Amino acid sequence: MKSHFTFTKKQRNGIFLLIAIMVILQVLFHYYNKTLDGNNHDALINTELQQEIDSLKLVQIENSKFKIFPFNPNYITDYKGYTLGMSNEEIDRLHKFRASEKWVNSASEFQQVTKVSDSLLVVLSPNFKFPEWVTNPKPKPFNSNNYNSKPKTFGQKIDLNQATASQLKRIYGIGDALSERIVSYREKIGGQFIADVELTQVYGLSAEVIERIQEQFTVKTPKPIARFNVNTATRDELVTIPYIDYEVAHNIIEQRILLDGFKSLTDLTKVKDFPVNKIEIITLYLTLE
Image (cartoon, rainbow, N blue to C red; front, side, top):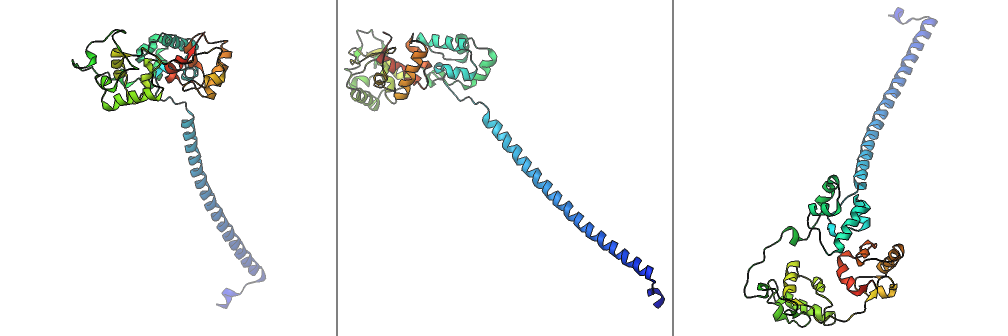
């Protein structure tokens, strides 16, 4: 056995060198595995992070897309029409049509009036929102015991400013609550209506019921009001008109300067933030002269 463990100096040096090489290789292998594991872990984290970034980018792109919400095409302003992709000529055709006190009641009629292309109509028409009485008209029931049976002439109609709640209840669709509400609203605004259109401000009255009222009643003694020339009125005068605040009054004056004067009261629909759905009430207080 002794002969197996007896080495010369060169042999011992060789053994030590071999052991040293093995230790170095083990250390290098250990650190290599550790680095490889770390790189794999970092790569996994980077992949997950990139996926999250890509997902957020998709959400941002979707949110940045232009969205069209349901709207009544009769009240399209210049700015609204521009954002929808309509040309100035198409917008002007619609405003001219509305200026004649007519209404667009379907997508096909909208195209006939504005002359928009078929491709644009396909984009816009799904978002058109017409009143319920237009999209789902209900036939008027026959009732010989109410005022609906025979429409009257202006002279035969009852003055809306003198009508009592019991008289109003004879209109089909008006009960105790609505008849009292009409009378209460009339008292609230000073005891007199200015025009029939103010019935639209009475809560709960549908367009059909208002039409039936106007067949039998009308304003014969309108409330006297101050009317202002829209082309000369000051901001302080404009804010005395219902539904016009200081901001809208300021915008009216700016648009008036831009247009070098309003040629028609319907031009007010081009004013920024103008309450278009109240224009019939507002124009009662305005003139062009």
